[in-house]
Image (tube, rainbow, N blue to C red):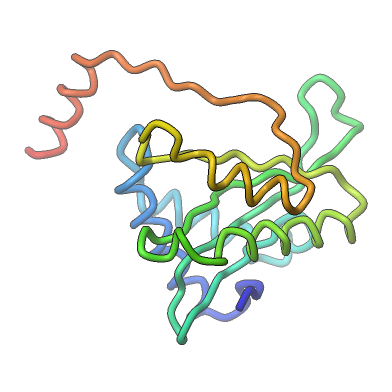
Length: 167
């Protein structure tokens, strides 16, 4: 079931899931307070209408989220679109209908808002070909690839960061 985060319990569960996501996917250490501030802003009266935090719930447990926000193009600030500020599904639910349900609901929100929608998919597994499943799901619901995101990592700096995190 997909629904919007509205209760304090929803927001606390979302924060907890965002920290799980950070541990798996973030290229740098994540500040839990910064995550909490973003969730608080998105759920505040000020953030209403500009932020949508969609939750995937199965058997009473949060198993994924897709958080989207209204932003402007940096080169044309008078034009807005929706984009994600987090899209994550727990590993044990990735080969289910969760991703598709979240993407469909985000597309519905964008249609209602009358705005284009851009979603970034970070594949933490980095296995060759692992991205094909999400591409198939996306194409089924009329998402169109618009490019790719590549991270350049300096092996030595990654090792230094990992060592620093241990101490």
